Image (cartoon, rainbow, N blue to C red):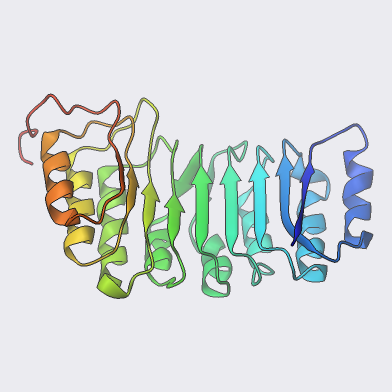
Length: 240
């Protein structure tokens, strides 16, 4: 059974980042860095670890002040990863082609990108061309719009019943801007045969039209549907 490592910063973080590539972990399966300032060599330390320890399947980077170049660099050596989680990058990061190497060259099944991130249009096409993807989390990204969701679903539904995707989480937990346009885009995924079992849509402005549409299109496949803090008491907005 694999082991895991959680790293939190100390006053000697820079020294540790220099030494990390030399440490030997024969069965290391999961690595999580939390609140680490990666501008002092952290990214290269992670890259070196992934190169040396091909047993690593899960990488978590939480509040590590990452930039797009850091994501691109990690993606170059992420072939063994199955689970990648980036939360609260610490700055506004736009992710698009920086994820190309990560997605196209890996078997990542779980991709969780949460908080303070922006997604280039190319990003959604990359997701649609990544067959192993099973779980997608884009929660707490305030910039996520109906146009983004429509584009995302357009690419994801191209695989139809051949899609491995079972879970989408775009929860905002308050302050979200998604409306029934996004709800209908998700309905189109289910109608195309994508086997979604879990949808987390907390904190947006979807109405009962989304609820009814998802339940009808889900055909009994949905196991989790979270529409907490939406506008379910309202009718469809004008133009929907």
